[in-house]
Amino acid sequence: MTTKDVITEESSPSVTAQTLTQFCDDYLSAAAFKDYAPNGLQVDGGRPIRRIVTGVTACEALIDAAITDNADAIMVHHGYFWKGEPAPIVGMKGQRIRKLLQNGISLIAYHLPLDGHPVIGNNVKLAEALNMTITEALYPNDSHPVGNIATCAPQTAHSLSAIITEALGRAPLHISGDYNAADNTADNNSTATHSKRLERIGICTGGAQDMIEQAAVMGCDAFISGEISERTTHIARELGIDYFACGHHATERGGIRALGELIAQHFSVPVTFIDIDNPA
Image (cartoon, rainbow, N blue to C red; front, side, top):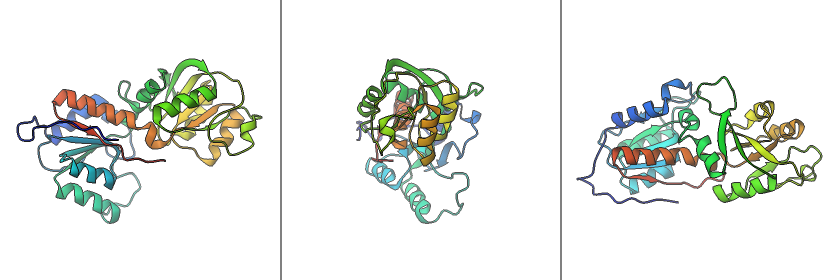
């Protein structure tokens, strides 16, 4: 899915990569997060930014789409240079960065700061899409929480699955917190048979399935994240907490899209969100 904007190329407003990054650093409180990759400007394309493309991950398909869109910058949630990955810029990483530099495209990325922002963060935007309200941190002592607790109208797991499907365009994988539920006897892909009402929901988008134990400690009826591991099924059943795996990509579209909308308004530059489909 692509949203297009109209631009008058030479007469349009522009912003430098450094100014844009400083604005985002300040707005997202990027320095407050201990992250797994550098937040901010990762590749400097060396030219004024008049047109921006946003997306979840800086994959080659997004770079190609940005080139087609004549973008000067790409802003993503998942960028490059992750902790522990090989440093040489070769292979797939080299191909991606080569395309950016050859086309004068800057890459700007925000990971945890975009998950945890209280206004445009991934958790907040997902909660809004699911008709929920963020009320507190999943870990109470965190000053900049990347996991949250939300409340919603009391509902069944079947109802929540339907809301998730409508909001994200894909059905979640649901694991019932009822140890003896019929849907825990087979590989199930959607709804539960038990009548428990869900209203206190833990949320952390992406690959945060292991926070399910903290959600149980905090008295949540259910936990929503993106991915699921083999162990997650047993944890949910044994701790009595429903789990909804909604897709890493699907749960993290909201934050970067909202950041792009904010930037378009603040700097008066066109921003195009491009969704590179990803079932994971």
